[in-house]
Length: 319
Image 1 (cartoon, one colour):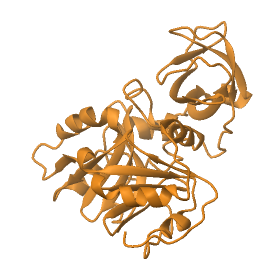
Image 2 (image 1 turned 90 degrees about the vertical axis):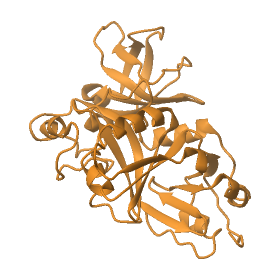
Image 3 (image 1 turned 60 degrees about the vertical axis):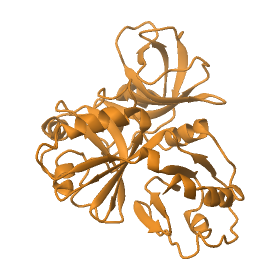
Image 4 (image 1 turned 180 degrees about the vertical axis):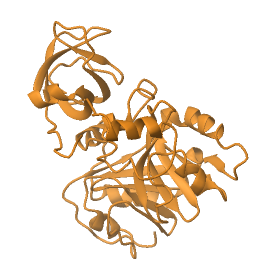
């Protein structure tokens, strides 16, 4: 960054992203290998594009969700740091004799999140940089810009190179912390899995089909037969929804919910954050989503019956 131009941003915030880490996958067989593992159309992802993606187990349950970016013949995965070690170890087991390298770049990179800000105004801080659309990966000077999430940008650089852009962004945007990042993702309906939720959900239950992270036209990958059968022969009985409650007792990811007075599991918490109110992403029975509110309680643990407002409207295209 040789020069910082003036730009005025009237919304949004910046935050560091220690909750995410970076993995690179390269090698002559990387495209074929990843296309046969992940839920998105890896072979159809052009260099300079990014997408939300996921990896499932043979039973079709989602191990992790992540941002997948292609840079030439290399692929970058941005996923929760808490899953990184287990994810890499498990993925390595499938490599066998393929020419594929899985490299942890977490210690060699720092990420800055720019959330709900005008991407054009952010680009104006980097002379010569143009960010024209979502799902874009751009390498400019010594920085990589990934715009995969709506009105948000992730800037990746060597830890020694992030101080100057950080000062530039901070002159125009307030600095926020982990809570604000989590709230932004919850409000956008973006599910991030952790140790308590990895392996619990089918990808359609996390709305990965409507988020563009699930390709039905591609060939086999772990769990593909079960996932396809759910689309073509069955019906998704639970969907991800945005909900809120005034109860200050935090509902942790993985918490199983029942209706007050009932014992049946009717939903599972995916993500939660407590601010003025408690905001949640819940994989919930669709009948309760349509009702708009229910009195929920924890199946395991103390969470007295309390109204939970379902504020996410079911997309009419869901099946």
